[in-house]
Image 1: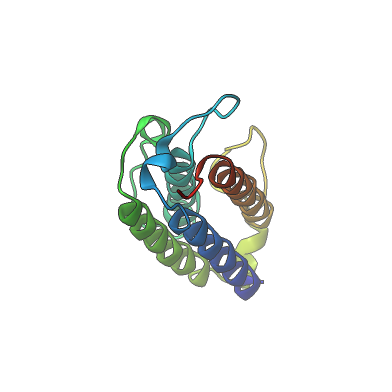
Image 2: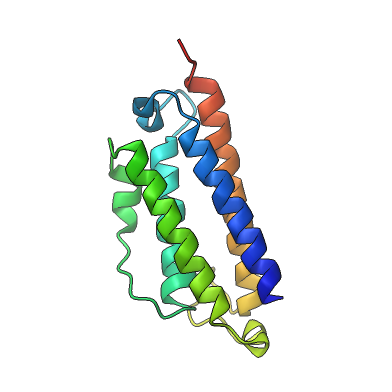
Length: 149
């Protein structure tokens, strides 16, 4: 099970990397449009913060101090810096998952994040869905706003 999660998260974080790298104009990463509350740059920061907190710190016990409000308020971070953050997150996720034993997946997740108790396995599936939801939003944002000249 551990290897399946490592493979899925690597696949999807590689997709996130490719989406952010595909912006031809890095200023568009921070543009809002009608009906789009969160630009791609903020969604990227949110995914990095989410995974480093819930997988890195909570599961892998890797030190991290999350600043969730900043994930949605920051602007103008360089594209190459966002890409480096994604690479760092990939490493954290793999370290956290690699540290797990098979029995750990059926343990109760250490924090009541969603308002109810859940297993680590359940929450890892939830986090994967969350990652892909925002990955789709980023893809749509890029195709809608990043029009090469």
